[in-house]
Length: 60
Image 1 (cartoon, one colour):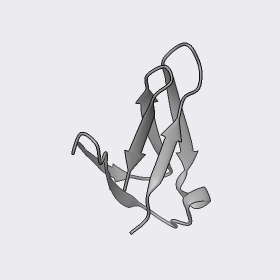
Image 2 (tube, rainbow, N blue to C red):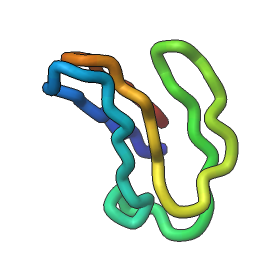
Image 3 (cartoon, rainbow, N blue to C red):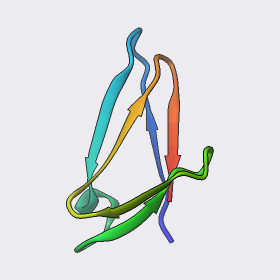
Image 4 (cartoon, helix red, strand yellow):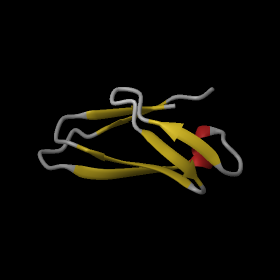
């Protein structure tokens, strides 16, 4: 299992995306937002999260 933490240090909300290949994942993957428990479903190319100002998202 891999984990990804996305951080937003900006003053505005931001959509942050990271290619799955940069996380060491080849092909499709299923993901879950760990703080909310929300299932993100099947991801094809990238992990994307809308992160509030000075906030973070943690996914597995």
